[in-house]
Image 1 (cartoon, rainbow, N blue to C red):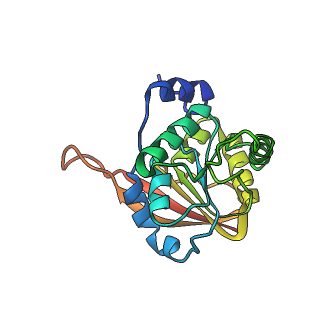
Image 2: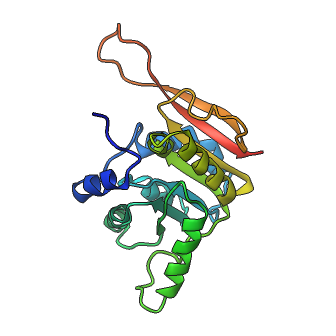
Image 3: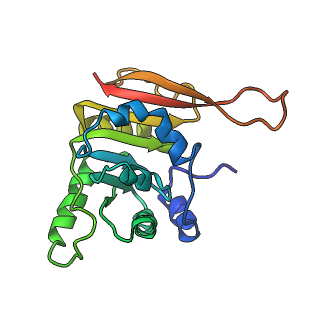
Length: 219
């Protein structure tokens, strides 16, 4: 039976024991695909990491000098895992973590920010404050694939939400196993394939299989 990737219960059970995992590509390999884009960004740029899970992508961004990174996942354990990974790497927590549903943006991000502000008197000063909704860059390592398990309507909600969260001159970089992930009518983005990444083969006669790195820019 296929995993219920669109169900929060699946991720809660998984993250109860999983502390680190990378989807499709390592974080370093993923960022190499978008090095020119990252090089063009000011280090104060707001970055949204959608479906942060137990990835160390945020640590790679911090090493490059990006501190205004919001790590978003709808399973609270993902935020715990992300903070632990950051603290282990740097000795402190300076990035942001938001519990939010990728199909309910920007509403959930606004609610998360309001909750953070309510807790300001009680927090320890870590995490850089609440998330914002004017991101220059959104990054997604196969979260679009997990969301699409819930059907086209769920993926459309994600697309519409990301569109509302990023700046008009911003971009959404999505890594997917699907060659037609964003072949949707009336999408509010221009879609470009940045890279087509061959996957490893067990035998030379195995068919070619690729991962796809998309750049989506607001229309």
